Amino acid sequence: MNAKTGAKRNADRNADTEANARIGLRTLFAVVLSVAAMALAFPRPALAHAALVRSYPAANATVSGSEVNLQLVYNSRIDASRSTVVLVGPDGQSRKLSFPPQSAPQTLATKLTKLTPGLYKLNWQVLASDGHVTRGEFSFRVQ
Ligand SMILES: [Cu+2]
Image 1: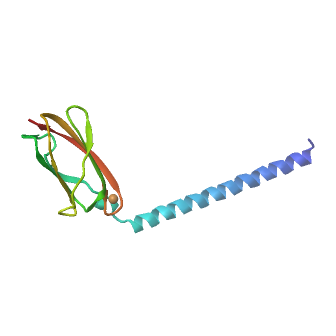
Image 2: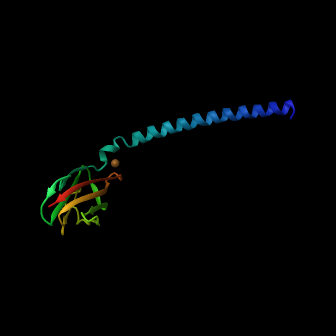
């Protein structure tokens, strides 16, 4: 390798490094811009997420009888047809609950039947009107 070629290679390398630095800055600027744009487009997304406000049975409550009118009330409208609620019984068997048409847009309600005494776990996953899915679980006891 002669000195001339070596110098040229170094020059090329420096040019590459500068180009990379420019692309890096440009990318960073683009990312900052798009994050800012998203913040403007969705000012308060957390408010529209569906959170469980209350339920019957309440979390960790004990209810009596083989039938229970289950009710899940959220803080925002939810799409029942695209929400999934699974009840896991004391025997470990799970059943996917089906819901009649909603009486209120923020509520899922159905009658649970043939409950045997023991601990139940309810897993819910709902689609809120803003298109976000949230999920949670709680337990209750049947005596
Ligand atoms: Cu949301």
